[in-house]
Each structure stands twice: as structure tokens, then as C-alpha cells.
Length: 449
Image (tube, rainbow, N blue to C red; front, side, top):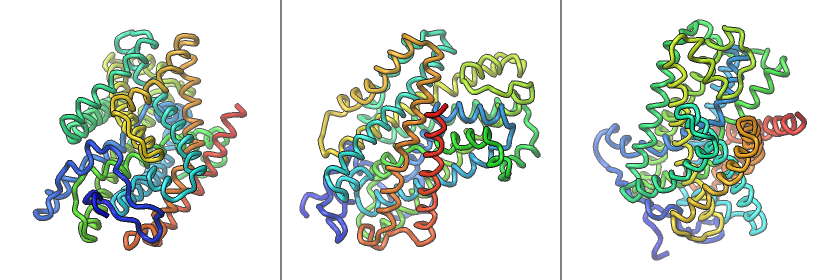
């Protein structure tokens, strides 16, 4: 067992091989965690990974479904956003538990547990998922650059490749710097929507009523379709791989007590961050309902259309600008975390090591090449269709990440004393089954028009 990292676990009775080298080795265990001191001081050391995860729950891929839900059905679908967020909180807590208890991220666990053909198939699906996720983020950032600076979409797509160098620069300074940039951009997004909601002046009583589930959601086929879109766009599969790895940037110790504390603090971190992401998603839907639906624009689903309508409807040019700034921050944030997830997936499944700049450049080119081609040929209409395609691919991939995660964390042979409590396993399997069924239906509806 010599050479194993401090937080790694050796091969347990349920694992086939010893713990391999960690993903993201350049930042592994680089952040010290105090073992003494106040609760808040120890919690502060763990704050960060949850916010990198939360980025994926407020990325440009979510915006279209939230806009369509608010403009078409006012506040009714707020309950779906709340339900999706609860699902996300539970799944991300499992991802953190897996990384801390076993010293393996989700990709490494799949490689270890499944046969080579199955693991290879899961890797292919995960790479398709990363490409689709990057696609939505690249297009979102390009649209924001077009709205703010009138840059052609093709140029905007190409400029998003620069985030590769930003990630490298920040990680060379330390993982905390990357977390600080991400949290700052989240603050920009949150602040922009706080101002937008003040300008829109939604009815507070109606907003609160929207968080109560309504039977109309399943009775109205059009509303159900948008609700499924919100569910499919909210729980992002790449975040499960990402979270199970980046929690290992903390150096928490190797005793069972250290791991129990680490799981608790990491769960608090991700829960608070995802509640903030829920606010952002809800704010987009509330803004759409209070502005577009009230004015009779009940079919607003494209980001560009929302931008052009906001300023005249709210009576100030700042409304559209804030919307585009938030979109740019969202797109840039998402590309930062997407490149990290891509590296984790390749290193975890294939156990190969590429130079970080090369891995991130490959990931970015996979997304940029089709985005450049479509924007050059079809323009704005093509980008809207490409966003839809990316969400369909993500919906298809989601179950292939969720089912292994729930399977691993519910197995005492693999997790030892850190296995999920019975109630958490039951919730996880229910969520996995619901996601599989709902996303299967969403995929069928999308493919059949």
C-alpha cells in the first residue's frame, strides 16, 4: 500500500484493485483543513467545491426552459424547480460521500467496478455528455457576447476557448483562486437577478403559491413537457463526476472521524450552494412570468428574444444589459467547471495522464468545432436548435451517471461504515427511477417533435 495518498483507501472487499492515482493531481489535497477550532472555521475550509458544482445548475442550458415555463404558465412550474433542486442536493451529497469515503471519484469507481467493455461504454457516453454540456455553455457565452458587444456568434464561440488558459493560470496559483473566481461570477449572476426582480415587481403571494405542486402540471401536456425539460436541464450528469473529485482537494485526514466530519461539511457546502442555484433558476422563471406572461408574450423561449423584450417591458435599458451580463457570467463559469469535469472523466475512466492544457484544449475543441460550423451556416436559428440537441444528449446520459452513483454509495462492501443510510438509499433509487422515466419521455418527445 506504499505510495497511496493520505486520503485514499486501499482495496476494500468490494473493490477489485487498489486506489489509483487521483484525478486532478495538481490540486489533490492542496487545501489544509483544521482539525480544531470553531465549527465555522472548519466549515470555511470546505466551502468552495459546492459552488463549482452549483454552476452547472444555472448554466445557459437551463435558461431556455425557465424562460418558457414562466412566459407560458406564469409561476406554476416553480414547484418543479424546487423538486429538481431537492433531487440535485441528494445526488450531490452522494457524490461527495463517494469521493471522501473511498478516495475514488465516480469515473474511477466505474472503471474499478465494471468490466472493461462496460466501463469503456460509460466513458464514451460521458465524453458525449461533456461535449453536449460544453456546447450549451459555449453557445450561451457567445450569445451574451453578441448581445453585449455585437460580436458575430462565430467569433464569440472561438473566444470561449480562452478559458483554457484562465483555468491553467488560476490552478497554478492554487485551487482556492479558481473557487474565488467562480463564486465571484455567481455573485454577479445573483446580483443581476435580484435587481431584475426588483424592476419586475412580481406578486409575492402568487410566487409563493407557485412553489406548491399543482395537478395542472400532469394534466396539461404542454406544461408537462416544459416541466420535464426543467427536470432534465437541472440535474447535470457531469457534476456528479466533478464533485466526487474536487472534494478531494481538501486534506481532511485519514481516520473515520475525519471522514465523517468531511462528509458532513461537504454536504453543507453543496446544499447551501445548490439552494443559491435554485434561487437563480426560480428568478429566471419569475422574471419571465412577471414580465413576458403579464404582457401577453406567452411563448418566449429563446434567450435573444428575452433580451430584446426585457428593456421595453420594464422601461429601462439596464434590464437587458443585466440579463446579458448574467448570461455571460453563467456561460464563462460553466466552461471553467466543464473543462475540469472533462479532465476528471478522461483520467478516471482511462487512467491516462495528459498535460492539463492539452486535455482542456481537446475538450474545448470538441465543443467549439460543431458550434462554429452551425453558427457559421445557420446563425441564431441554428444555435437554438443546437441548444435543444445538447439538452437531449444530456438527458440520455444522465441515468448512466446516476445509477452507478446510487449503486456504489448504497453498497456496504464498497463504502464500509460510510454507506448511505437506508432513507438516503431509498431516496436515491427513487430519484434514479424518476429521472430515467422522465428523461426517457422527454427524449422521446424531443425526437418526435
